[in-house]
Length: 638
Image (cartoon, rainbow, N blue to C red; front, side, top):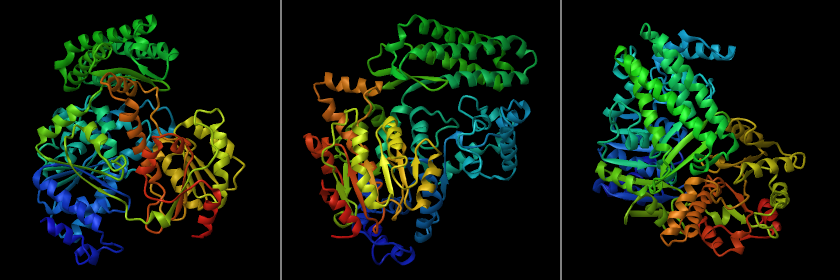
C-alpha cells in the first residue's frame, strides 16, 4: 500500500492525469508514504511540509486508501470548510473511493430550533436591524438541511443574535428538547459517527477529547488515526481546553436562561425572579471592582483586595442562593433541572478558581470591555496530551509548515509529550534563491527604543516605493501598528488597509482588489492568510515575535523552567518566537510564480547570538542590508 500512495501521486498516477495543474513532487510522495506507515502502525508522526509541498494531498490520499476511520482536524473553520468542500471531494473523485465523509463543527455553529423559538417569543431586541436579522434566520431555518450558520453569510459573524439562537452544552435540553428529532447538532453528530472520514477543527477536537463539553456522547474516539493540520497551533489551543474557566457572560446567560425556563413551570417565576435578578448586578459590581487592575494578570494580583474579595463573595452568594432555590424546582422540567446543574457547576468552578495555591496550574484573570474571565490553566500540557493519545490507541499525525526550530522538532515534541516520535521534514519546493530576497535594514535602534517604529517606517518607505506598494506590514503589537498607520497616512500613494478599521475578510478582499495596497496587521494576519500573485510582493516584520511578558501563564511556565535549572529564554521563548516568525514570513511566497522581498527589521537578528537560530529556520533565500539590492530585485536585475 505504501508504494501505491507514492504511485498514486506520481507522474504516471491518476492525479497527474486528472487534476489540472497537478505537479508530481517527490517530497509529497515521501510524506504520503510516512503518513501511510504511521496510520498502519498506529504511530505518532511529526511532518513539517513547507509551502507548496502539497501536504493536503499527502495526508488525504493515504487516509482515504487506508480503509480506516480517520479524523482530520484543521486550525480554523475556514480551512475546515475548504478541506471538506474542495480538497476532499477532489481526492475522493480521483481515487473513486466510495467513502462517507462528514463535516463536524462545535455546537455554536449550528442553529438551535428551540432557542430560535424562544427568541421569537421573547422579543427584547435592541434594534430594528436585529428584528430583521431574526426574520432572516427564521426564513433560513425552513430551508437549510445542515443548520450550519456559515450558510447564512449575509448575517455578521459577530451578530449578538447568534448566541440567542445557538446552544451551549449548558443550556441544551438534550433528548427532552421538543425539537430533538430535528436537531441540527444531533444530525451532524450522527453523520460523523457513521462516516469514514470526519473533518473537524482543533477547537472541537479538544473540546470533545479533553472535556467532553460538546455532549451527545463521544464521536471522535474509535478513530484509527487523527491527522492534525496546522499543528503548530495545538499546544496553545490544548491549554485553553484543559483550562477551567468561568466568565461574566456565562453567569449572565445562566440568569437569562433561568428566566426563560420559568415560563414552563407555573409559579416558579414568583420565587425565582428576585434571585435571578441578583446575578447580573453582582457580576457587574465585580467587573467594576476589577477596573483598577491590569487587563490580564495572575489571580494573586486581585485576591487580597478587600473590594474584589467582597464582590467575589457577592457573586458566590448569588449563585449559591439561586442554586438552592432551583433545587426545589428542578424536577418540574428538564430546562429547570439543566439550569440547576449549571448553577451548581459554576459555584464549584468559582470556588476552585479562587484557590490560587495549586502548584500544577496557574490561576489568572482577564478583562474585556464589559466582562471578565477567570481561568486555571495547567502548566504542563504534555501529560494530559500523552494520556489522550494513549487512551485513543490511534495514530497521531501532526503536520504544518512550521514545526521545527533550525531543522529540529524537540520543542514541539516536548510540549506534546511525544517521546522519540517519527518525523519527516520537507522544505518547500519553491526556488527561494530566485524568487525571494531577505532585506535586513542597517542602522535601526534596539526594538525597545522609543523611536523604533518611526525609524522602522523610515527604513521601509524606500522598499514600498520600489515595490509600488503591494505589501503586508506585520506588527508584534497593536500599539506599534496604530503608530505606523499614522506615520504612513499621507506619505505613501497607496491605499492603506489597517487592522481594526474593517473586518478581516473585508481588508483582505480590498487589499487583493487594489493591486497596490499596503496592509498593516497584527497577530491574526501572521498566519492563515493566502495572497498569491503580484498583489503581495513585500512582507515586513517589525520585531521578532516574542510573546508578551505580561502573560501570566507564560510567566508561570518560565518560572517552572527556571526552577528546573533550565534557561527559559532558550527553552521556551526563542522556539515559540521562531515558529511565529516562520508563520509571518510564510505569507510572502505562496506560489511557484511568486516573487517578493521579506523585510526583517529587528537588528537583534544580526547583533545577538540567538539571531542565527531565527535565520537558520527561514527558507534559504539570499540576504542583503543594501536597499539598492531591493530596488534591483524589483527591476528584475539578477
